[in-house]
Amino acid sequence: MSPEYSLRSLLLIILATFSANASNWLYLAKLSSVGSISEEETCEKLKGLIQRQVQMCKRNLEVMDSVRRGAQLAIEECQYQFRNRRWNCSTLDTLPVFGKVVTQGTREAAFVYAISSAGVAFAVTRACSSGELDKCGCDRTVQGGSPQGECLNRGQLQLHGEAK
Image 1 (cartoon, helix red, strand yellow):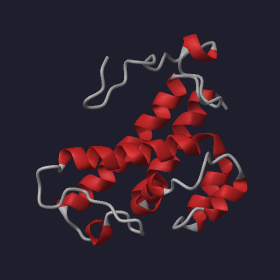
Image 2: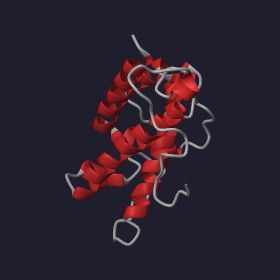
Image 3: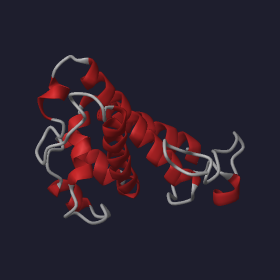
Image 4: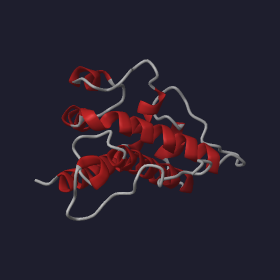
């Protein structure tokens, strides 16, 4: 199985699980007491994850710090986009991170699910293209070659407020 196929498959699985339980994954952003997620035992201790998410964490330890960064980005972006609204993406230190808002069928909940998936996809892609992850081979300059093409090079991916 090619590294590109593996990365695409992993992203699809994470995004599917992320969408179904976005508020659970977002809690990773709030866990300052947990260092790097580099051991299977850490996955079992992560609060709020369902069994399927724990198993995914164990199988993809290398990616989990990127997933956490993506969750942090999602919260920051949500707060930036809603900064002048009555509900401004304020977070709680409990599950769900955004409170009852994400359990209701509102446009705010839809935005949280969308930005959560986007944040994780962005962070994993950035980690891959910068060479932080060994299981992807999308950037010829970092991983030595990809017959299907290249990912964006470091510095080309940007969020609001980031300098080029």
